[in-house]
Image (cartoon, rainbow, N blue to C red; front, side):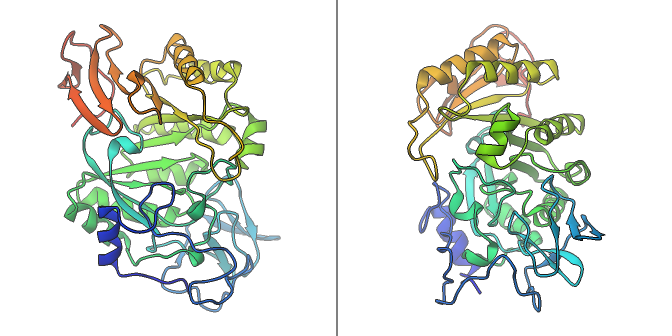
Length: 389
């Protein structure tokens, strides 16, 4: 078994920013593949099924087929036989039933400014209690959190933090929301869903920070408890989604539409990766689709790429490409367009789409000035889309 540290120490280290960090998460570090913390070999893809342990939880989204048990959470639609593990590494079949092994055992816990998600139009300057388990539905070559996203919960240092305790810790840390984030909350769907119910009952908000790769039924069920989401729209090409992310585009577009239909506040991030997602033609197509489908008021964050994981050979995204992307988005009719990972850029600020004055001034994750009053621009009275209090 992977080592577990006490909840008190884990939370203390996470909140204070002490200890191991995976891409700036201030989280427990994933252990190396092949060797567990006690020196024993790590489990293979075919895992023991005799005892799934305390942190297993039967999934409500599966059916039995002639070829095996079919998971119905995401479009990977894994079909598994007893003892086999899902693509996301968080689900396993035992005795013909599908279980999550990522339930109540996060490997990353931290208190973040909500602007870090990024959510710029939702409860600005508030703090969000952020959790993640190991595992992901994608295998992005450029993943910034690969040490946990490309691991199994069996191979990370975790703590015991059941859904009710997630709510309690969020309250005790003075947070207004809980964010399911860092790796991929769809991979730990059951934990996300049950935690969200406790969080909502306590009057806090639930945030989904996700790649959006989820089937319609589980998404609509989760939307009953979701308040806001940031979806990473990684490109506007099926081919690039397959090659760069091991995913596909169409399910993500469906997720965006469903979140909007369900009344979840939505912001969208597009990471511009040199030689992959930096073509003006693709960016134009994406922005036109967003405008055509009613997302003009939903913030779009163009994010700068840093050389990481399997794409260390690539350069940083040139600033001029990011600025061109922003121009394209504004020309397409999107009202709130930001540039991320470029501290000090004026494109971190929010501008009134009517009078063009700066109505929120930011530096990094800190708000320096806010001129939104009762959801309106203080200068001209124009309504500014978002959830401001």
